[in-house]
Amino acid sequence: MKNINILIFGDSITYGAWDKENGGWVNRLRLALENKRETYFNIYNLGIPGETTINLKKRFDNECNYRFNTNDKTIIIFSVGINDSQIIKDKNLVLIKDFKKNVIDLIDKAKQYTLYILFIGLTKVDENRTKPVLWDKNINYSNKEVMKYNEVLKNICKEKVINYLDIFNLLDTKDLDDGLHPNNSGHQKLCEEILNCLQDYYI
Image 1: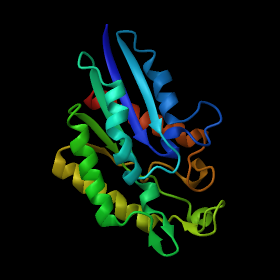
Image 2: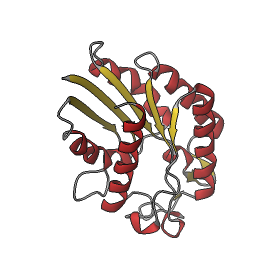
Image 3: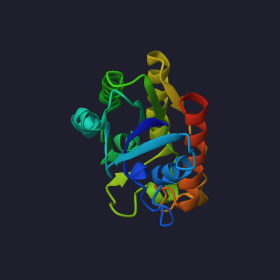
Image 4: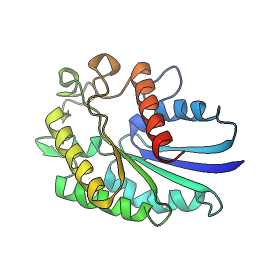
């Protein structure tokens, strides 16, 4: 039996916010992969609510060093960026030029541990509920900004020869709990799409 370690870095969507049935797409992925008897999977959910590329860069090496084993196959998945794009008082939380540098740095760091890297794109939002968000009138998420940051991700992955999964049109408004975070059905859609991608390239 072979061992595969999957380290999944991200934000509150990765963490599993608002999936009250199965704890988010990462946990759903773990449950699906447990049925593969010929392989033992270690799935590490390293999602933190509110995460940005700035904060992820600071903790990335420590998280990997604790979990990396040269004897096992390691897959690193990134699902981060939507918080970078958020607008607080007419300014993006992370400027797009800094976002681009951070993504490049994260990919370069990941390549020190494995060549099996997947970057998941950003999900669209329901602007009727994210301009502003329900929990803070000073915070706005817009599809125009999300698309802008999404395009940066896509282009960097192409340049760095990293697999990129575009999920911008995957979820409908009915799949979003609060306009930003997926609900149960949204997390299931994400799980199925990401599982298919992993099976095509890495598993």
